[in-house]
Image (cartoon, rainbow, N blue to C red; front, top):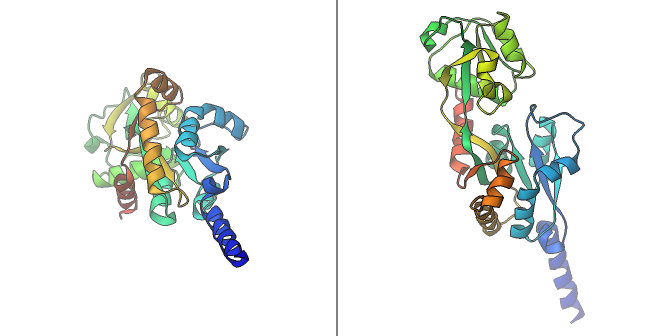
Length: 275
């Protein structure tokens, strides 16, 4: 009798380690908004307040407390997925959640609509009208390791465009200045960036809008079951379908959801990594 109780206690302890909601432990939700998401002074509490509509849905669907961790450093984001520290991740550089699925056992929950694009831009007064006109010209992009740089280069590769000198800058906001001052001829920016929202004001025009790719994916770790992932999707859809919920989501830049982005995210990595 006593041996049976001890055995059940051991099993319960093991399950509690695998299933944090069964043991009452918090789930950790990592949020990354990329280099344009704000400085290091932003706190976990501020990000939790911003993403409260999502957190409320998560806590209801998963029946567990969810704690938000703001992750600006990409190495920390990758390490948290690799080590299984994060139970949920939403990230603006979509290649990170994609690797979470492919390499670290995460499941895709959703992606945000509209999709993301690379915009190939030049000065409004430039004589270029087509991609052929910019063959061999100088190009300016975000830093070399940035997702959008890989995104733009993959699109230009597929379009058969080759460039002369390629410049890299830490922030996309520096690209209009560089083009205006003739430091480069062609630039690449994200469709969801501040630069893209100010193209006219910045004196820029778009030569090419790339193919669409998933934007701001939400993924769930191994400790969250497929049934819970579906409950989370159902909760997000229900929120987006109400006027109040849609307004709350719009306030943080979330509009509609793609509820089955897993294959698209895996395809994104194949595309980015193609030689």
